[in-house]
Amino acid sequence: MNTITVNYDTMILLLSFENVEHTFDLRDGDASDFWHSFEHKGKDYDINFFINDDNIAGASVYGTDEVNELTVIDTSDETYIDNVNESGDKERYKTYWWYNDLKNKLATGSRIVFQVKDLSDNQTYMWGIEEMLNEVNHNVIADGFSPYTEHDWFDGWVEGDTYELMSVNGKFAFGTVACKDAVEHMLEAIYRNIGIDQPENHEDITQFCYEDVMETAQDLEWHSGDVAIAFRRFLETKSN
Image 1: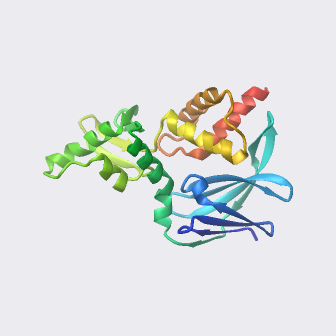
Image 2: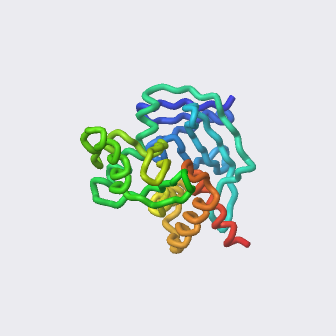
Image 3: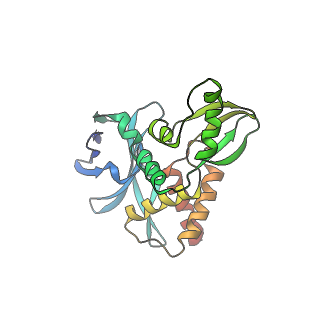
């Protein structure tokens, strides 16, 4: 039986796949949506360990194909694993990757961009943390409380959740980071996982994947798996 054993405190995932064990460090990928390549019985595979919206953990193991001399996942060759043994602090693990990445960007002064969707007219905007805090603090200050700061945001409101707030323009939904920087970060993780250096046409790949994700993925719930699929589509366009 194929099984997953995960310790959220040590960030170690043990995959038992076809009676062979493989060990992964969850710090090498995204929290709650972890992708990594591995070799099994002479063949290359990818594992995707995830925690869904109902807080249920699972994993899929994919076979791979060679496209333009690069290894990409074969979504038709999938083994789903729902036999999962869990231990440790799951909630802390779920915030690990985004929390540290955003905190580091804050410390270095990098501008972090969020996609904001106005649910009254479905218009989308790109807001920085300043605009986000301005929207959040509008009612906070009116209610007589101290306004939230950047540090309050990153210490308490960890990226990945959805917020609905009332504003002068209607109701807004705050979702995952939807900027080219985030797509590029995920692409760089893909390069590392498949063991290649950054391609010379990396900027073209980033632009293609960014546009593909924005066009095809669910507005407020896209993730690194969508970027991986976009990367595969890019390779397929070059092979035609």
